[in-house]
Length: 338
Image (cartoon, rainbow, N blue to C red; front, side, top):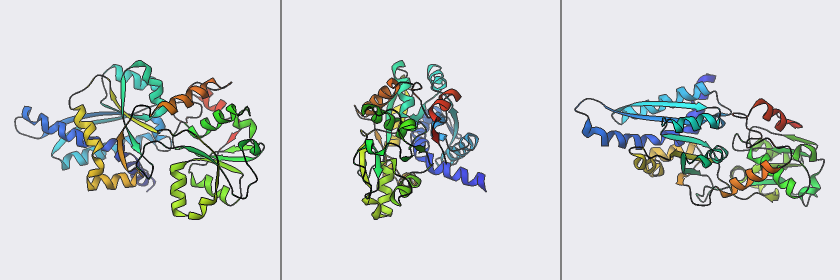
């Protein structure tokens, strides 16, 4: 039962990101039909995902679930899909796959892309729209109870903090460390009495609302969703807000492969199909959108500023996946987890 549930949760989370590529693969198969003399059509999709995407899911379950999903949908569309899904632990492994031309689609967090972009091996093309207005960018916010006397982050010194991040790179705490540094207040681990990281944003928001902790950092997408479910949460007060950022990047190799345009177009049109809209709804995403010029600037600036902080581990301070043990030990010093 636990394995079945893990598969289902994974499909709910990832089908809109990777599974949408099947529309493009189906187009590829159709275009390739002229080269097939009878019989069943065949196509290929080699996908790579950063393990940061699967930080809370068993990767073997992830591979199995995604492959089953690909194959079932392919059969429904009349072709056999030769698909592979590899979950890689490091940007170095992703880079090698790109150099060896053995991948057609890469799904990763923004920080992974930033590590790769200088090599000119990959092109960021899509991201997921998360705001209620359909935009791709969102901010992290520092929240306190409306009855709190805190008027600035300096007022929270020695208090208890909860932090929830949407991604495995723990962008919420990264932004907080940078913000504290800009205010000349040191680092979160030493500034606050305790810093805990629940797995879900709701487990950060509610304790602040009920006065169990002093403050929390969450993303605005999760906060807005929580306020829709419980309008009383609108009484929480925002002390600080990050620049809007994108969370994930869907990229293709810099060297175009056949039917790349069709693949991208099919992913962009997912929301136009009833079944596609259902998948996006489960994924809490309105649609996939093209990455626009400047969309990555705020993330690029944030990680640049973080890496300049004294004692910061390079590039990936809190990521539970690709980070080394030494990086995690350093990042988690003074930081508790539920």
